[in-house]
Image 1 (tube, rainbow, N blue to C red):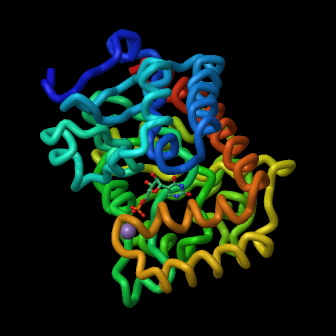
Image 2 (cartoon, rainbow, N blue to C red; image 1 turned 180 degrees about the vertical axis):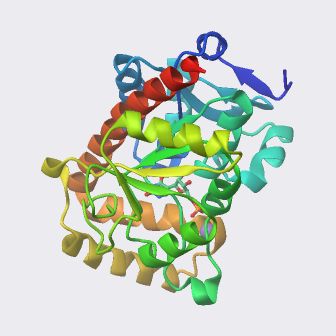
Image 3 (cartoon, rainbow, N blue to C red; image 1 turned 90 degrees about the vertical axis):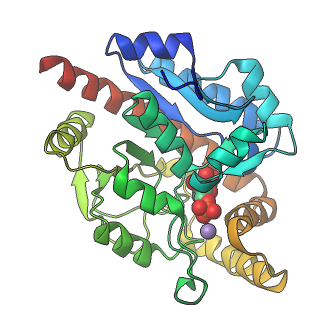
Length: 307
Ligand code: PSU
Ligand code: MN
């Protein structure tokens, strides 16, 4: 066993017995939502996964280890602490060896989940190709990570702080299947639509599990991005979000926000300027993703038992 991995005993047992496990990220706790809603949501999401018949494994870094599965006290700690490092792939060895507390992004969470043997990961929104990337070269490591690490990523699509068209192009270039659950439109986080059609559509968890199994059995490594549209009653119209996104992008340019700070800056600006509405949607969609992720993990575990 890798000495840098600290797998929670319940997660370890489930993996050994071939039972479904769902990985969850911690950036959403530390950098994605205000306290105390972040802690309440993180714990509620774990509960949704359990109710769905799978074992939750929230992933984060502390005490020189990558934790796979946190206690409620550890989730609380991450939600409250102010000096938590945002850990993408490149930051893992630094944060480990400097004994810092680190909240993992999609890229880092996927990689650690894969090291532990977890096949399904649930998040809210992924990173992608930023607007203006033709000049800034700002493309999230989430995308390159998805090209090489074999974990299914359940999200509510791509948030429109990004260039959704370019993000879909990049996913195509990297050979990453993009599957939307139950509809033809590709969703954009707060909205069930994005102006883009989904490259692929599947309607059931069983169909997704079959696709995952065939991909990985063939040695086609890498992720499958599963887009799960936000439930209609929580949708925030895209036109309403666009004005806030424009303002956020302007503020980021004025304040010369660069590098890893760009995404958290945009997310926090939008959260602060849209008040309760975007937060309510955010909480609803991540719970919805957790439900779908648990179903997919169960279906995939069932497929693997048959072999
Ligand atoms: N997009 C969202 N919500 C998020 C993130 C992105 O809608 O919470 C977070 C995720 O942790 C994602 C990270 O992996 O931001 C991407 O950061 P960057 O663009 O710096 O790679
Ligand atoms: Mn970036």
